[in-house]
Length: 288
Image 1 (cartoon, rainbow, N blue to C red):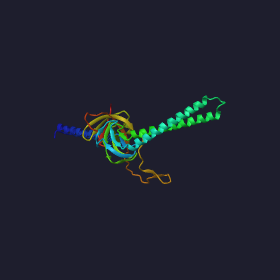
Image 2: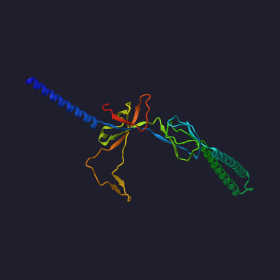
Image 3: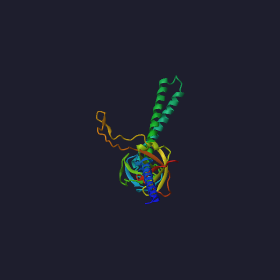
C-alpha cells in the first residue's frame, strides 16, 4: 500500500469520526439541551352549564357537538310556577304602593295642620308609618324583580360561543339548581400547554416564539404566554397532626420534574379544527 492510499484512508477515517462526533453532538443538543417537548396538550376553557332555577325541562334546543353562539337558547325549564310567583309579587307590590300612598297622604295632611290641632307625636307617628310603608314597598319591588329574574332564568342561554359537548339533558328531565347538564367549549379560548423538564427552564422566556406540531402534522405558531410557578410535591403530604409526612425513601436516579408552560396560539391554518385534549409537540424557536 503506497503512501497516498494510507493518507486517503487516514483522512477518510478522521472524516468519519468527525462526522460521527458532530452527529452525536447535534443529536444530544437536539434531544437533551434544546427547549422542546413532545408532552404537549391542546386545551380550552370549558364552561359547565346548569339551570339557575329548578324545574322540569320542557324543551332542548341543541344537540351534541353543535356550534352555538353567545345568547343562543340551550334548553328551557317549565316556567308555570315562576310566572305565578311573578304575578303574586306584582300584586304585593301594587298593594304596598297603595299603602305607601295612603301613608304619604296622611303624613302630608298632618304636617299641614297647626300645632294647636295636632300634637308633635301624631306627626312623628305618621312620618314613621310612611317610612315603614316605603321600606315595605321597596322590599316588594325587590321581590318582584327577583320573581321576574327567575322567569327569565327558565330559559338557559349560551354564555359564550363554542361547541356543545357531553350533552346530558332531555325533555322531561328534572333540572336541579347547579346540577351540570352539558359542557360548552369556548371556541375563542384554545391554547396549548407544554410540559417542559425543569432543566430547560433557563431556556424558556415569556413572549418567546413557539412552533406547535399536532399529531396529524398540522403546524401552529404561537408564543409563551406564561410559565407555572408551582407543581405538586408528591413526596410530601400532611399527616393527621398537621405535621409533614415526608417519604423516607430517596432514589439515586432523579427524574426531572415537568413544568406547565402555557402557549398562546397566534396563527392557526384555516380550516384546522382544534380538539381539546389532543397531544402535540412544542418547540421553542431559538434565535428569533
